Image (tube, rainbow, N blue to C red; front, side):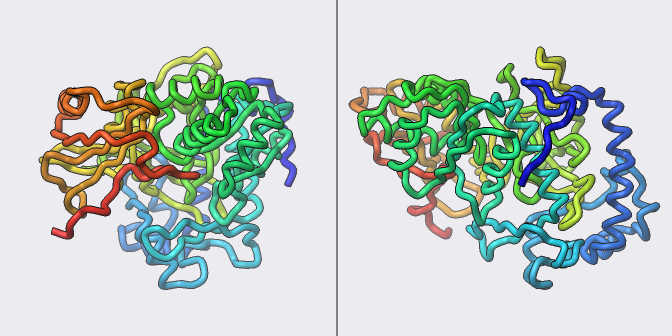
Amino acid sequence: MTVADPADRRPDMFEPEVETRDPTEQRAIDETLFRKQIAYLYENSPFYRAKLADAGFADAEAVGGLDDLADLPFTTKDELRQSQADTAPLGAHCAAPLDKIARIYSSSGTSGAPMYIPLTYSDLIRWIRTSQRTYTAAGIRPHHRVLTTYNSGPFVAGAVGESLQALGVNLVPIGTGNTDRLITALDRFRPNAMPGTPSFLAYIAETARARGIDPAACGLETLVCGGEPGASEPAVRQQLEQAFGARVHEVMGIGDISISIWGEGPEQAGMHFCAQGFVHVELIDPDTSAVIPLENGASGELVYTHLQHEAAPLLRFRSRDHVVVSAGPVPSGRTGVRVRCIGRTDDMLIVRGVNVFPSAIREVVSTFAPTVGGMIAVRPTARGVKQSPPLPVAVELAEGVEPEAGLAAAIETAIRERLIFTAQVELVAAGTLARSEYKSRLVDYTSATDG
């Protein structure tokens, strides 16, 4: 698939007119698109016709505009899962006929049956344009040689290669499943950029060194991290940048909405919202569901609404991604609000009333580098969100490091002071904890009881 570059393209920005647009002007454009999208839902989506009618909205006119969005019900993943279980093959929320669907991706199905994500051709083009904005922000250029670590399917990450190809790069597609092959290609082709999850990129560096290959000597300039939180953590970012001799930039999307919605610019000061005109974003308090203004320093859960989607448009979809917002001018000129993802709400644990994100534990532990290697595993004693202190945490030591007296206690103290809960730290040898070719699971319930 070929997507033509916009006429106003500049080297450091894919669509400057869009990415530097005044937010007030963008809001007016989005208002018109939103009203059209709502009319489309009433006409084509049995799911939303019923959902909005149940909420007291008889027709599209009754819904109103973006200023009235907070009055509308949320959409959750469980609702979509039930929709597909009840109405095969794509659910009552599918708003386009099957013969108009150009692509069907699926989720991993880790929490049950796989979820299917349909796209029309126009939806796919919009996904790619949004991704081109994020990857350009993250430092990838058309003349770059890019080694991809994502497989082509069935998951939505497979569209990464397609988006990069449309950007005009020299693509070296490898994917997961054979890390030795990937390292050979990295050493042989010396790519400018490599996208991947921070967990897998750390594993690549570790495995390359074990093979006698210095990842910092492989020519990389840019690492584009996505798929899981972590790359914004200072210690994780520093570890990756030192390992590869490259700058780390984050991107973030969510399969139900778009593969890449946010992209970190050259300032490395948070990920810019890059889906202008395609997606509307809100911030809410995950406990009360109240809308929080997208202002500097605000934190909460991201909620997304499609503005031009055809196959399965979503209205106020709860992402479960918990972020901290940054706002204000940046040298690149991008006007999209910026975020840093600190964890997923549905991965969160509650320890005696304190909300605990596993990625936040990892961030505290990583401050003890180079004594520790950066790998952790939270090992709850009981299944479920609520946990009694102390919360067991396994911390992997760095290669060749013997545990120092008092190190575990020092980490426990740092966790208690920074995160306000009590942990029980177990130091384990380097290489002990499981590695992943995609996302790392920071919570291990293997030893947990059902009580």
